[in-house]
Every structure is written in C-alpha cells, then in structure tokens.
Length: 163
Image 1: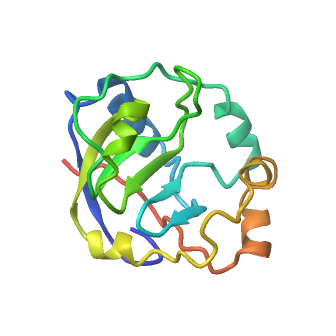
Image 2: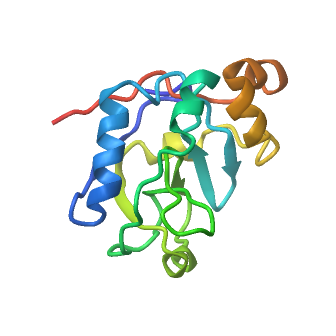
C-alpha cells in the first residue's frame, strides 16, 4: 500500500533465491513501511529501500548479500536489488523497472519478481524530483530530510506478504 495507491508483486525464488530471501525478510519485519520512493526516473526505474530511521539504515548499510546470477530479464514491471559496480554489494535498496531495461541484465541486476496488479499505480509515483534526493543524506537523516526538502514524495504505507 502506497500514498499513490496499491500494487502487488509476485516473487519467483528460482530467479534469484538470495534476493528473494532478503526481500521476504525485509517485508516480514516491516522494513519498507513508511519509506519514500527517493529515486524516480521516468521511463527507467523507481527506487526505494533506505529506511526512514537513520539508526536502522546504519545497521543495514554494510549488510551485503551475494549476487544472484541473472535468470530473468529486466523488463517492464520487474523488481531487482540495486547495487554498486562492486560484486556482492546488494543490501536493502530495490527498484522497479518502468520500461524494458534489458541492458541491466549485462550489469548483473538480477530480477526476482514482477508487478501482478497495479502497474498503473507504480507508473503514477511522483517523479517530480527524479534523482535529486541525496542518498547519503537519506542514510544520515532519514525521513526527516526527505519530509523537509521533498515533502511531496510518494511513499510506502505498508508492505506485507500475501500468500
């Protein structure tokens, strides 16, 4: 459930088992609740996954997981973990593809799920600020920074596992 509406996604463990396990545990523990969509690049991706509480962010900052091999392409509506150009640098940030971004497959961004309902909601997430929110400041100041400087960002109200 988001400030823009609701969407659902289905994960496929065989596509990226390490990523699915991390995502499942984050959702089950309420990690994504009240998080802002801090990077929204039209025709590319919408990204989230930095906790709004800097103390919680700090605990996860170096909690890297190993890379999964790419088994499914980065097509419209799929979700993958963000990472740096270093191997095994995935932590808690994920992105949803707005378009077919197959070039990300060669950069080893392994998708692990796909939007099954509400892609129009994802498409409607506020992109006004695109990539302006500073990820370093989000890590250090959390939602306080985002609410002050970017009060109109859409956000996740709650993320839950539905079986």
